[in-house]
Amino acid sequence: MANVDIADLRAKFEAAGQGHVFAFFDALTPEEQSALITQLLAIDPERVNRIHASAMAALHIDASATTIEPLPADVYLDAEHADPAQLNEFREIGMKAIQAGKVGVLLMAGGQGTRLGSSAPKGCYDIGLPSGKSLFQLQAERLLKLQTLAGGVLPWYILVSDPTWAPTVAFFERNNFFGLDRKNVHFFAQSSVPALTNDGKIFLASKGSIVETPHGNGGVYTALESAGILKRMKESGVEYIHAYCVDNCLVKVADPIFLGFNIARGAEVGAKTVRKVDPDEPVGVVCLRNGKYDVVEYSEIPKAVAEARKPDGSLQVSSANIANHFYTRAFLERAKEFGDQLQYHAAHKTIPHIDVATGETIMPGTPNGVKLELFVFDVFPFCNKFAVFEVVRCNEFSPLKNKDGPDSPATARRDILDLHRRYLTAAGAKVEGGDGVEISPFMSYGGEGLEAYAGQTLTGPRQLEPTSKAVATMEKEE
Image (cartoon, rainbow, N blue to C red; front, side):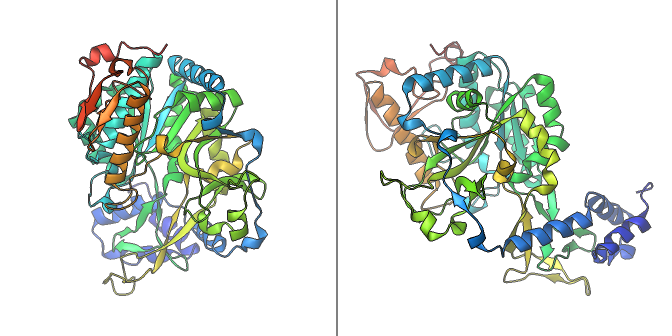
């Protein structure tokens, strides 16, 4: 704190109407003062005021002034009905990019399993498969398998939050990084933003600290820059990035077909989507908003637009967003140029804090303030070349969000085992029993390499692992 002009810093916050953060400063110990100053030095109070005003104004935008249109046909491909030869071409392009070391994988894993009844990072969660593997392990093994199929290295960039950083790293270390070379696994943290009263005042968490909350997954763009990840990507030759959220249990990590599709299209940004079939399904959709690519939340879509259908009966606006994206590194580097133009979203929340007048702790029973966040898709409007790749939901999307009911461990487990049943059936095997047969990613990345089970009857619960992982890593895709 020796080189900090506290009077100047205090004046800066007072000029922005945020001087109350110093309300108890003079009564703090030197250590407490130093900690508060460290927090405040990372904050531009005038910028906080601007993004708060913008986010609150956005809550009251007249929906009738917004034009929502379906995606242009030339940016969209329905993989289920695409020419298989074309998909094979995309796969080859993607595999060659991986082999050449041009692909990196970005995992957004900042969330905890609170809604699952766990305080651990969500990626540590065991959904109850026969193998007992966590989400992190499943994804690491899919990545390992793809590396061996393509003959290249896929660096893994893992975005965590302050609460999940230490337990995530510890989990990887306890599990020996699941067989990955640890020098290719890079952890970095998303930044935070102050929590605010409804009229924009910064909440105090204690007399010597302010309330901060993560930026949301849209904070990944500034984090990539500030943590030096973009520089690391450039130095290692990474040109293309596959990004996804940890809670999609069916995710195809670095899917070579998706990569190849975007590379072939020359896309700066690509979105993998699934089809929305019910106009009332509460999911955001990828579409055009006022002529620009964007994701429009379910609640923002006018009823007439949500229900409009094509001549074949399918919804006109139907590309459901699943937070599964492609980027060029060049686009991510350009993100800092429009970072200040990104629209923050205000979420009304119940925020414990201390009263700046009395110093008493307040535990409100109803929402009393706002948390500001960015969404990962907020960069879409700034993209010049965009592409959308629609896949079959039951093959590629099963989110883990709730302890019970929809999107729970039970549905995630069911969806993985159902997919593996389809893989084995396609290979000529028969699966019996209701407990399922799990295929290790070391056996198969996406249903390939299972011909040896043709004519066999497999009874669950059972897991199929290669007899030797060394042998498994020798396999190459034809």
